Image (cartoon, rainbow over all chains, first blue to last red; front, top):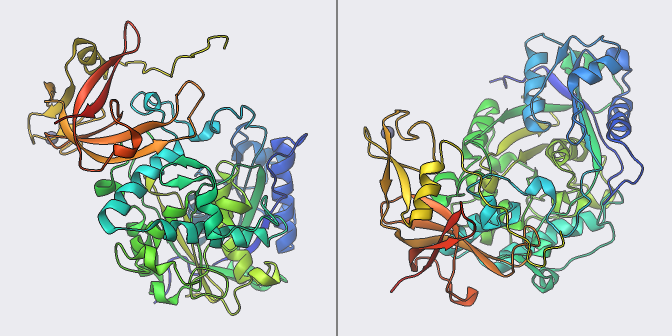
Length: 384
Length: 136
Ligand SMILES: [Zn+2]
């Protein structure tokens, strides 16, 4: 069988510098860095690009603005949320001949200044949510508590996820938390945020940009790069996030449908996956996705992550750049950074001690249970 | 922000949600119910999320339920919230769910499954919040 994405290859992936704050940097400069760096990584010129999905959050730069930066030459622009969604849309545009080389990039900075409150993009203003003091961590905590109640998921499992991922970031020179090693006991020693989440269970906030460029398999062969193939991908969208109660019974397995569809597209199974760039806004979410996607049975995710299995050198390394917990979390930028890091990992471009030797297939995901959406993408070093 | 105890963000009722908030002010917990398929609909919607029908009316809930899930929050959403506070998902007797805060119970004594009842907490002339407290 052939994947419906057969014929589409990722030829460049790039992260700008990531930092808590990038003082003096504008989003336009930052996203331009992402655009140029991504093209450089592929050895492509701006004139090679005929498809664009490039946007920023704070200053609302759109693909149409950026089309002007490219002199109006691109024929296709996409407006999907940066991340797996945008990549699937761009890949579909290439697969159907609407364009040949599509650049997807995004950046965010200059947003987070009032530190006495949680960061603004985590604070919903809906009338049935805001008045109860909810924000992202509390939304996901409501899911985690229910899971722990039903399955007896242990606190130690959450700590292992947080420590495993944060240790990856500690070894990545571009990670915001570079050098900050964390052991499981440090996680429970960090201050409580929203039960069961301690500070180190929660993603950081930062600024940065990222990009990825896709082209046809045929054009990829002419470039001096290791092409990475899009094997499958799908969305699971269950409605507007942060407006209603995050009910485990209704939304707890969000992402399962996306994973099933993605695996069906290429005929692979979770057993074929070598590395998992899972969305990690909070430690628990990794456990949930491993169960939802079929890496283990329902309720067994807590046991699955123990014993070094999700660490570098283990059976299924997770969030190998340090993820949202340690590498970077700049608004929506992190959505695109998941497939970006999956591509970099498969290209062998991560620091040596974060490289998964012989990795051929990676899964990347966006969104989580508290957000009521979860998108999945499969990437590989060989086309299917 | 000179106020020593700034107000938490209060709901701004819409034409759609007004019957719910009016009810809270009057001491009644109101929820939409579908006359066709019987689903309870919350948060308020223009259609039934069970059958996509428009035959919705506002009915009175008993205000009794159990704790479905919770989180004790130590890092406030914004400074107006006094920590720790308990965010709850309450499963009402009628089978629908809502977000709320727990009152009248120490965070250490909160347990999933515990019986709860609505406790209307007046916040302004317009807004009374439907919190929940333990019931015997
Ligand atoms: Zn109905």
